[in-house]
Amino acid sequence: TVSLNSEATMSWKATVFLDFDDWEHFKKIFKEQGNAYYSKKDYPAAFNYYTKAIDASPKTASYYGNRAATLMMLCRFREALEDSQQAVRLDDGFMKGHLREGKCHLSLGNAMAAARCFQKVLELEPSNKEAQLEKKNATTLLEYERMADFSFDKRDFRKVVYCMDRAIALAPTCQRFKILKAECLALLGRYPEAQSVASDILRMDATNADALYVRGLCLYYEDCIDKAVQFFVQALRMAPDHEKARLACRNAKALKAKKEEGNQVFKNCSYDAAYQLYTEALAIDPNNIKTNAKLYCNRATAGAKLKKFDQAIEDCTKAIKLDDTYIKAYLRRAQCYMDTELYEEAVRDYEKVYQTEKTSEHKQLLKTAQMELKKSKRKDYYKVLGVGKNATEDEIKKAYRKRALMHHPDRHSSATAEVQKEEEKKFKEVGEAFTILSDPKKKMRYDSGHDLEDDGCFDGGGDFTTHCFFFIHFFPF
Image (spheres, rainbow, N blue to C red):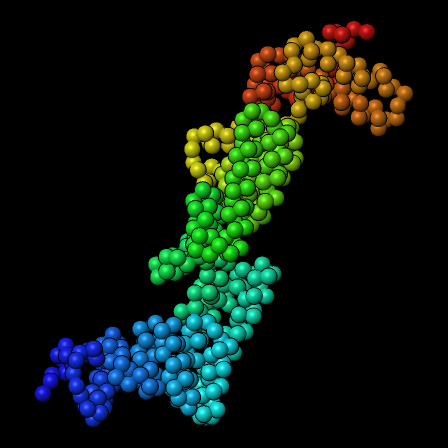
């Protein structure tokens, strides 16, 4: 008697001479042992015994079917598919073989092949509930694929992710669906999720070109262009015809080169050239949100240097729309608002910056903008006299004489009462302006933002008669 646990019995290569009945006996034992381990959910052991049964009888369809079922439990669906296909090749009427082949196709994402297998089962056994349900699942999977393809073409990446989540629930081992989901997550800016999916695939298959491409895509969209190029190159080594990796690699290299060229000419103070280069860089890949946000901000900086403040503000707004956490874009836009005296807008941007990063520098910028806003709500005496804020005492005096003559009541004595009233008002404002700006102390307090009326330093400019006397006394005709 030979023990079944001995090496001699377990190896069909052993030199053992057995008659037909002995072989049949061992085949039966191997199958039964496989069934026993399968029932106990010890699938590796069951796999080993079913393999021995197949070695003993390679023409028995049910043995391949049993091993296919075991491989399915081990999530080795490609191997299970081969066994189930072999089973139905040996016996086209083997219903379980067709059913298992269909399930393998479905799990791997081949819905059309799965539907054909389930249809074959229903031809053999029309009342088979499992085949009816699985065929419906295959039809549903085909519909999700169709919807995903349509949505991808329309760039509705959220819809694609939705479809792929449901497709993966029906086809859990389909790498194609997982890759498509990961790619769309990357296009939606959900980089950690996309990288997680790609990394899971790469752990099982380090040479998967699609997963390498998605990893590179995430890095590319996070503005880590050098690392991204490495992944794209690796993907192309694995699959030289990978068109998406080739295009992404080309875009990444072009974007990096154009941006660096723009930065260099900006450093050389060639602002027009820098502006043009940043514009060309922005045209390379509209999908690269993070890099494009930086490019818009860079172009805004060049635009500000060229005094194109409206365009600079627009570029900063575009940068913020792409990345609402981009502090540099808020700061640049706020400065442009300050330069164009849009102080309320500047205060809003500086408040946003200070709420995010409470630094002393940002606090001072906000304080300055608030002061300028306060000052802007008062009468602008420099504008009243038509001089700049750095005007000298002599320039202020000359401007006062010119404006006072322009609005003096004697010049408008023949005008309508309405015009005379308006000119008197302007003449009074000119007097107020000169009273403040010609006095060094009052001018200093005015320039620093103090409200002179509240401080009691100025009584509102006096009455009309006082201004007439003042003008005649200092500037007689």
